[in-house]
Length: 315
Image 1 (spheres, helix red, strand yellow):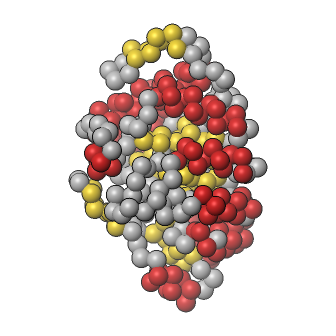
Image 2 (image 1 turned 90 degrees about the horizontal axis):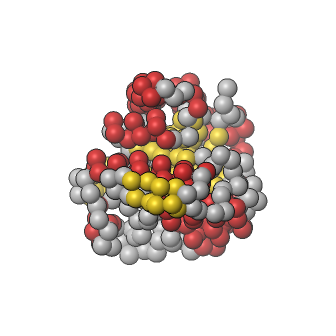
Image 3 (image 1 turned 90 degrees about the vertical axis):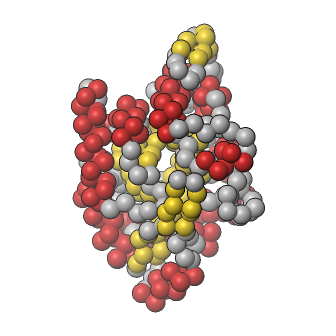
C-alpha cells in the first residue's frame, strides 16, 4: 500500500520571499512531504505582488533540506519545453533530487491576454502539453533528441546535466473539472495526478475520474497502479468549533470569475478530528496524496495544527 503523503500550497501572491521561506520551513519542520508553488505572472483581480514560480523554487532549494518542491502547475504556454527541461534538471540538481515536476495546459485566458501570450482552444492546449511532456522526458533521459510534432520540433537536441532523480523527477499534472482530453493525457504521462482548483471534489468525483483514467491506462497497456492519485483541498482548521467559525468568517471562500470560468471555493472546515474523518473518505476512495490549501497558512497556525494532529493519524 502506498504511503499517504501531504503537501501544502504556499501562495506567493501578496507575500515577500522571507514570508514564503518562513512558511515553507515551517512545513518542513511539521512533517509535510512537499510544498506547491504556483505559476502565474499576475493576480488578475488586483495589482498585488506575485513572485515568479521557478525563481522562488530555486531559492527555496537552497533554504530547505528535506521537503520536496513542486510546481502547481507550470503553465506550458509560458515557456518552450526544451527550456523547461533544462530548468527542471538544473533545479533537481540544486535541490539534490527533491523536485516534483508539475505542468499543466494553462487555463487563465485573461492572464495570457494581458501579457501577450497566445491562448489557443482547449484541445490545442492539451495537445501542446502532450507534446511538451514527451519532449521534456526525452531530454531528461536521452541525447540527440529529434522531435517533429504539430506544435513543437527539435533536431538533435541534448540537455545536460540530466536530473539527479532516475529515470527522471516525478511528473505531475492535474485537472479542475475532469475533461476527457486531460484524463487521457494523465493516463499516458503522469506519475502523479491531482484533481483540484477552487471547488472541493467529493470522493465520488474522484472515483469517477480515477475509473476513467484506469480505463485509458488499460487501452494503452499501462499499469494504472503506477500513477499516484491526489486531490487538492482548501482547508480551514482550528482547535475547536468556535475557532473554526471565527476563521471561516475571517477568511471567506475565494471566488474567481473569468472569461468562461466562474467558481466559488468549496473547502473542508473543522477541528482536527472532523478533518481526519473527512480525509479518511478520500483515503478509502484511493487518494494517497493530499495538497492542502490553508487561507491562513502564513500565520503558521494551520501548519502546526495539521502537522501535529492530522498527519500522524492518517499516515
